Length: 74
Image (cartoon, rainbow, N blue to C red; front, side):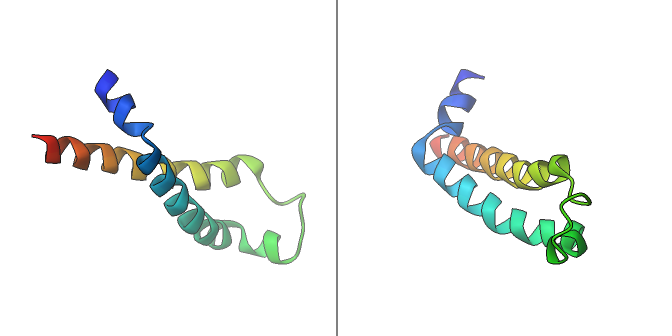
């Protein structure tokens, strides 16, 4: 487990995951809350949905990067 977190917090892994989460998060936010975003209706905008929309791609990217790095080391 410790090796997982060591790989997950490497600078390269974090930078890649942030980049992917920003791209995918923006796209998913427009898909899920586009009407509220375009109309600037901040009362309709869900902060929790927005945070999760960026967090999920970050986690998935980090997890897949760590698995790939582990596979390469074997």
